[in-house]
Image (cartoon, rainbow, N blue to C red; front, side, top):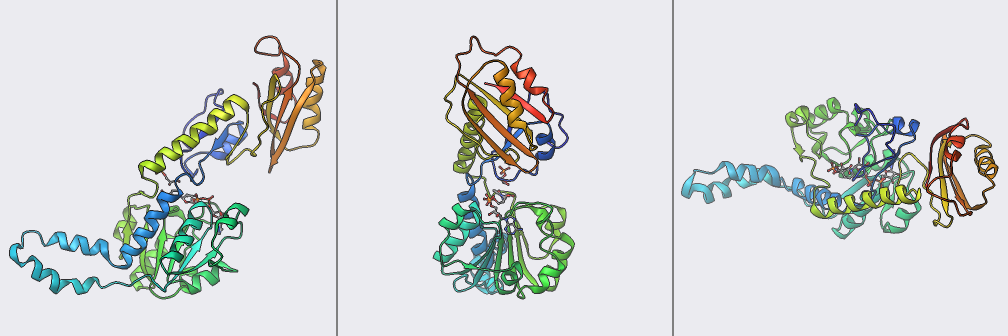
Length: 350
Ligand SMILES: NC(=O)c1ccc[n+]([C@@H]2O[C@H](COP(=O)([O-])OP(=O)(O)OC[C@H]3O[C@@H](n4cnc5c(N)ncnc54)[C@H](O)[C@@H]3O)[C@@H](O)[C@H]2O)c1
Ligand SMILES: O=C(O)[C@H](O)COP(=O)(O)O
């Protein structure tokens, strides 16, 4: 959506998925457009494919299947050729190996817990772990005190963080040098987390044994020992339905009540719809905004029934329920009056 112009009536964008790097979030914030995503709704789908590909590639399954297919046309010789050639695909079991999980959010936590059930040792790193995830995480997941500790001790590494300025290129020449020789790296997050030139060299030298990625491009397809998956992480019927329902519900709730859940740019805020009318304003996070909005409301001799004000960085969101019975759909002039307050980005009277 980065090249799209947004109409002045656009109120919300919902991403039926987790990553929002296809949406110009900063531009939306400046224009007062709320952006939602659906955290966790596709996590199980991704977890299943991460564990599937982790095991399958450790057993050289993808290359083995391709080779078996290449024997087509060999007639009665196929079984003999299979037995003679299979030794080139001898793999490694994951049992007893150490899996490093970077990012213990919706997906990472599921992967970490289930990898324990597959008899792996699991070490996790997430300096910003949420309380909810921490509650769901098995206490047998060891906590790495630094990402370097995780890199140094893992036989397999799987990454589940968003692509941001901080995480971009987190897999690079320097970080590969800390890792065990022959480490397998699983990337179902985003291509930009990995420096392509550096991983090409690391795969070539054998420093990295396998690179399983959900984000193939021309370079990836040329890399030795890369396993390109065509962005199938969230591609299940269940996950697409979960995401679509969650996205639709969040937008409906926002349009009808102003309440916000799972926004990536507005603060989350919700109050039961108690009044007769609701003022919902997105504004700069500067002093006296709430005072100016309530004063505009009191100029109309309207009483306040309930209110909430939440901030997020440079911006804040205020919802005020008005007690009085208001005739008709609108309070004439109120919206215009509030929108003239310096610092207001967008305003609705619902
Ligand atoms: N391949 C797919 O189809 C697919 C599907 C869903 C999500 N994704 C990608 O996976 C990512 C993770 O998804 P999720 O649902 O688990 O998101 P999430 O927000 O639940 O979890 C992300 C976790 O990363 C942690 N984190 C952030 N920066 C970090 C850092 N520098 N080091 C360590 N941890 C850090 C956060 O604290 C959070 O716990 C998404 O951002 C998206 O890019 C891909
Ligand atoms: O960020 C996500 O949720 C995934 O990359 C899934 O993307 P998709 O919905 O385009 O499959």
